[in-house]
Image (cartoon, rainbow, N blue to C red; front, side, top):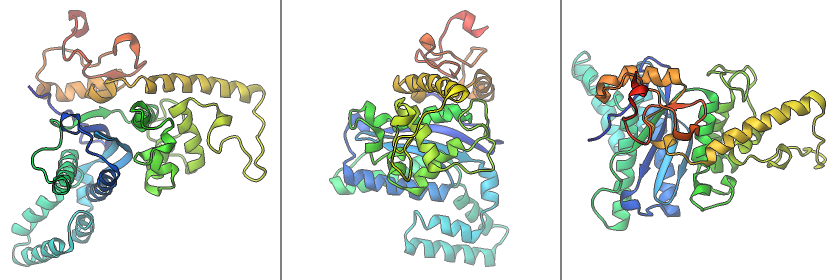
Length: 362
């Protein structure tokens, strides 16, 4: 029996998800041309739906991404007809777009409170909706791939997987790094910097959209600190700062060994490291980075199969809101990963499923 899909609180400004879709039978369906096509469709559907892609990775047999899904009700309320048509232009050819425009005008003149409103709501219903985003993205790629390969039938293995992630900056950065390290784990490259079909690889190559996604993870008050929430600083973070911090998380590299870090922009000479309290602060941060890097490198399945990931309070809230849909008897939702590999974070479902000892459920 399929596990029910766990969705975020619709009252939130936005909810974060790690989503994953695998090719049927583990086939390697993504060559360079296919990866380029998939990236184009990803950008198009992100623009249409308003779902913000933070980072992503397209491997040979699967793709995954970390995305922020906005409050659909508020998003749709601000979409007029011209904005709706602008969004549709990303995924619709000119002929079909002209037909939609004409249909809207015709219905507005004949039945502004009836047929026009119903037709418009039908189109708007696809905006800000994660299941629609995933379904249409995979369907469009399947159609393209099957025409190209001269085949028929499904291309994807079962349903896509999704994990609801708490919007806490430190956790989101760990999840993003987990995704951007995928090509290293798959043995495709030694450094995520070298893989162009990922959010970090694209950002390192200068892609503005990819950079914006990763920089959003470092915009909260307190920079890299925990518990910062989603508050924003007055000074926008720069890509150079973001890349240096993100590479520490990806690789655990010393600050002076990172790309462009610790080197004078004009002289090209190595800068001196800090002393005293500044050096102590750097040492403490290095320990925190090492802990996060260790977690990212473990490639834990909890990041892909835990249904929800975050603090105990967050997971309990998700469990309470989805308990009836999940149809489980247990009383508590938050689960600690075996061996404590997730540290302070908890998941909604551990790798053993919904089971657990009686003491866990009291």
